[in-house]
Each structure stands twice: as structure tokens, then as C-alpha cells.
Length: 182
Image 1 (cartoon, rainbow, N blue to C red):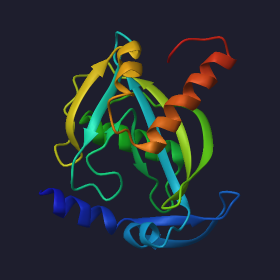
Image 2: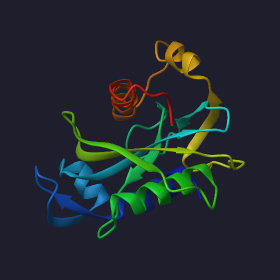
Image 3: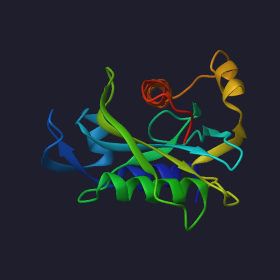
Image 4: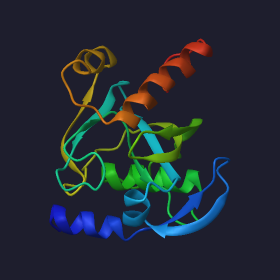
């Protein structure tokens, strides 16, 4: 499948449209929801390997949202009728190219808004000890990097804004609990 075909398939996904309290008020195709800035649901999953390194990647140029940008999480939209938990596992397995991943652990949910986008974003973490084979339609480059290297790269990379916000909020979440990474 080409990047253009993947973007077209992605635009046809049916999503739940939600209000400011995350209650379903309708449904729309992803392309329509994006074009009209209709609030919907998304998930982001921070993935670490057995050594605690963070999975980072660069999105393909054909992505509907944030093409060719670097990301610190995997994830995507929550399909119509799908739960956040179901979407987190599905998206993580799809983007990593694995099966049998442990269920990601929910950490927080927040409303992400920019001039172009608005969605509720449920943020998860998971440890992946499986060999990953990211989808070439989704991921142009990837690696597992130590957290200190990720922090250094943030100054160089054009990072997906909601992924960067997830990274920041997960750091706060862990600091508030006096713990380390998942």
C-alpha cells in the first residue's frame, strides 16, 4: 500500500464525535472530522523496551495528520464504538508490528486543542519485549533511545505537538508519584 492509499484509508475511518465532556454526540469520517475540526478521541502509548529505552519514530509523508514529523508515542484515533483501552492496544500492536503486547496501562487523559485540531487524548504506557516490525505505511524511521538522548533530540527534531505534550505530561505524572518510567 502506498502512503497516499494509506492516507485515503485513514480518512475513511468512522469516529465518534464528542462534546467538551467526552460524551458521544455523533459520528463522522476521520477526513471530515479533521477538515471541520470536530472533537473526537485519540490514544497515545509511550513504549519502552526491556532496557527502558523509549520507542521514537518519524511519521511517513503520507500521514493525514502531522506528516514527516518525529513522534515519541504510538497511537491514533479511537474508532466509533471502540473504547480507549481497546484502541490503545490495537494502535500499539499495529504501529509496532507485534502481536501479544501486554495491555497498555492508562496514565491520564486530557483535551488536546490547537487551531487545527481538537481531541480527547488518553495516554498510556507499555513495555514491549517483542521484536518490533513497524508498518512502513506509518513509520519512516524508528529506534529505541535512552531518555536522556530523547531529551537532547527534542531540540533538533520537529516533534508531533500532541506527542510532545504527552511526553511532558507523563514526566509530570511520574514525578508527582515519585516513580520512574513504566
